[in-house]
Length: 299
Ligand code: GUN
Image (cartoon, rainbow, N blue to C red):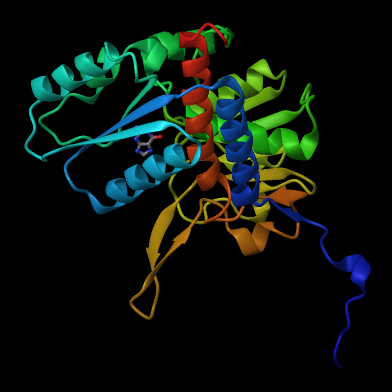
């Protein structure tokens, strides 16, 4: 016998359209640029020719142009020395037309990533990776800091779902990277959430995660978070971008969340692709605009 489900049993989950939210943000950034007669300048440095990095860098440049920014891309060979890169950063630090500097990671082995990031003027560090910006965020001072783009994008999506007050919500961040997990936890803490961080050594992560009103998954393990990890009604933000091989020999992108399994339980969920990804670039533009406003005493 065929069972017919009534419409009341259908999940009423919101699939968060990160592309649409990002496009709105980009339009508002472009408007602000026109209003202020400002020319924010973004310099993106690519060392080597990793195909994925090349695509990311090209997209950042295109977005910058679409926002009315000055966009410059610097391509250094795979064999570039650390001192070559440091000299370029020094030049850009002193360049009045440039308000944001981004060095695409990862870097080739001969270059010390930490030394390079710390060489960027913290006021132009639109990635928010310089220790001064890391410290300002950890200390709860966002007035003069620049915050990493992906966590900023995630917070924007969470607020859109839950409203401006996240006070008292239990947020679980899965993954403790410097780029996503740690700054995400700090942002949520500042928003008055109760924050738990889960990582590879956490005991019984499913049970901990099942208590969360907000779940941000950023570990790089395809499909790790399934329905056993999720409390009904949770907002689920998937930062993972994992390329997995399929039986037909092709590959596809999947997140850290088992989307089909979690979808019926969540109140809102980001897809991969099309969820967090576009927000990262939009927030990079926002950071560059904020930096240009501060340099022009309008911030
Ligand atoms: N490589 C992957 N993600 C990022 C990012 O957010 N910033 C930089 N600079 N490189 C990356």
